[in-house]
Amino acid sequence: MLLEARNLSFAYPGQPEVLSGADLALATGERLCLEGANGAGKSTLLQILVGLLLPQVGTVVAFGRERRAERDFHEVRCRAGLVFQDPDDQLFCPTVAEDVAFGPLNTGHSRGEAAAIVARVLDELRLSHLRDRVTHKLSGGEKRLVTLAAVLAMEPQVLLLDEPTNALDEPTRERLIGILHGLPQAMIIVSHDPLFRRSVATRSVRLIEGRVQAVDDGQRDIAHGPRIARQS
Ligand SMILES: Nc1ncnc2c1ncn2[C@@H]1O[C@H](COP(=O)(O)OP(=O)(O)OP(=O)(O)O)[C@@H](O)[C@H]1O
Image (cartoon, rainbow, N blue to C red; front, side, top):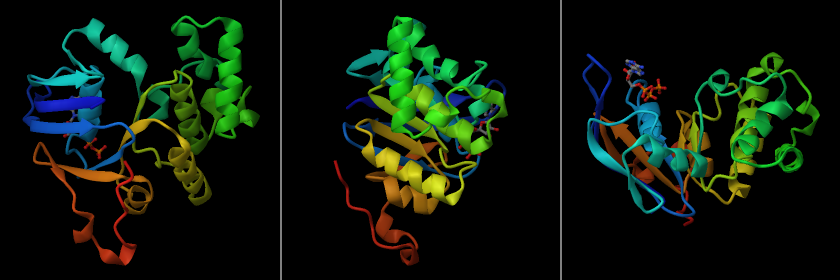
């Protein structure tokens, strides 16, 4: 397993439990979709997996090692890239090129290497035309794709995507589906969009009452089409 949450329980200070014994595991090659009601704890679970929040109970095992301390999670965050629900939480440089270069520069790449990574990633996502744009003036959908580019520039082994279709129009959503199918990374994708989930998921789970349950796609509204075969 690449990432594993074991028996996680978590409550924000002074709040009732959001997670109550949640288990989740991501294997190589999987695109695991995580669904659940608003406030079910999906974003919280992603943040725990990369150590941005620490559970009161349970453990995170990432890339073969149990992770507890902040220094353990520093490596996890390099190898598992989290694309936040709100791009404004992630983009903070003046231009797109600087935002995408930030991660590679921070992990020791030279300016030249970082520039080459920026050019490659923007080209792969067909975003090269945005290279010198002022980040905070991009549209919502453009920001979302640039955030994905910034995370891919870190060359992570795993992607954690929190509602990646938010603010995307139909053609861009279709383009994102194509991009995700073309990426080699295993990923956990939080999404409220059933058609999107069906297009990308190799497996689906649902967070309900603080626990993760398998979703049997055969029980879903069959009007949306047949079950997607597991591809891993
Ligand atoms: N920093 C915080 N302090 C206190 N409560 C919080 C905090 N962040 C989230 N919560 C609460 O924890 C619960 C779980 O939030 P979370 O964002 O993980 O849910 P979610 O499943 O991702 O929801 P959505 O689908 O609406 O994005 C919610 O009730 C939310 O209000």
